[in-house]
Image (tube, rainbow, N blue to C red; front, side):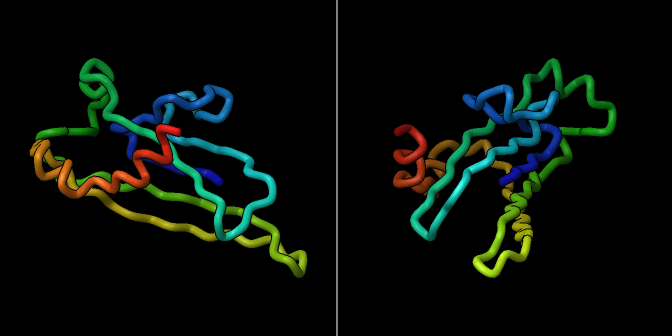
Length: 112
């Protein structure tokens, strides 16, 4: 599985071997998986120092951040397949609103 974040974000608490140099791409080989397999990861905003260096990124105008998962697998019939899931998350600074929307079962799974 490969997960790509917006360049203003970076993965955290991941093995550096699985990350791109700018920490925006996480690639992990999961081996055999089934419908009960769960994968979690954490990400955060890059430091202000790094964000300022990005001349093509204006954080004051940014309203949402895109990310993408690319899942490459071999089907039971031997064919190689790729599933791409793209999504966008809105930016918010309202901590209470974010806590209400948080999926604590996913957060707990990641903590384990």
